[in-house]
Image 1: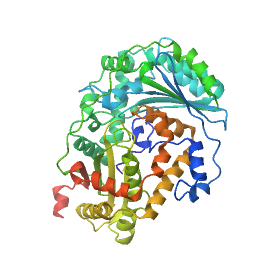
Image 2: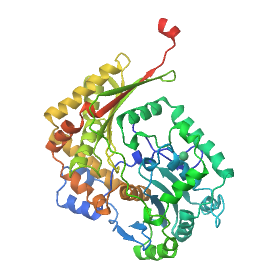
Image 3: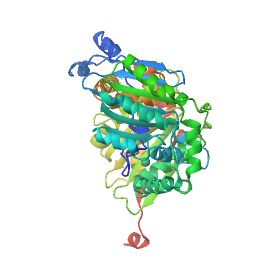
Image 4: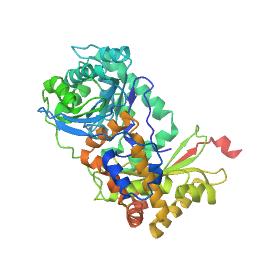
Length: 482
Ligand SMILES: [Zn+2]
């Protein structure tokens, strides 16, 4: 499937596809409960049928004098905290010729400082029974630990120390580059579906660096070195380019005090340039790419459209695209599933997705795997028909209500996971959104109308703004003859 799923690095706790694993933003429960109580949200019966949600998190947001932004999300259910440091830098900020440096630096951040030499931070996390992870996307890089609340200050000290204190030598950099190359091998080079995904993305973006794989292009990864890593680190790892998100059994006053005592002592070491990336011209050509590989067991197709993100969209557009993706391809009640798997069974599986959270124009995707006697071209045409029908005739009130209810219920369920909550805020604040935009997301989803959804399909699902990728089995000439 073209929607990258979150994966833990096979070699270290790295998560370079995290961007796409964050489906959308999160709500302030007070507001959502009020909306439900007032019946503002259509079709909320399903939400109301769920166990009562915990008391709403009162999200706080403030800045330290050195520019570090801090978000605190209280969650008092257990004496644990999730401590996340997010940097406003990702693969799309890399200099030309250095693709993969954001992700490579994420690995190198575990190599130690003068105060805490190699491995010490991770050892302490393991010794106290905590969890840690790190992730890189096109727009951000993040590090987190989940620990008992009494260890929060210690985590903050470690993280503050490596914000500017990283020590790198060739002895640690070069072996780690081999680790990253092996990661590229296992995740992409040996995975035909992932290879096709890279090709589709590269073809979709004519100019914007979102066309580059987050892990980098292999010939460039092979040449990344200590100087590249340090240059990138010194330019972007500074408190005024970071967002600290703490979710858990802790209050805002306590976090403020601890943050001043730890991160407050880290000086601003760089002024960060405005994130102005090369922009896409008008797209004029329908594009297809075909990847043939002998390992393909099941041919399939994936298509991406260039569409506005929650940051670049006009008011309401991004929310309409979220609903459109849900109606078209969100699960077994979706349009695509009903039309193409159940009613006229040309596909084994189909789906649609929208990656709303991004600093610049983003992607809307559809995908499918055909039945054995159906060609990829036939499935492609059948998908076109379903999309054209929505663009021409719109969606039903039932479809709209079901989609809105599902998206808002996801927000409610997310209250269950400290890490998910923290990720929503962290990814939003490093992708151009504000805390307020996160908390008002359900309000805005609730306002999407059937006309908005039809207009989104008409405007954005234009094949000239898309690339369709076909994954086929490569056969040898001998096989072809037989
Ligand atoms: Zn990695």
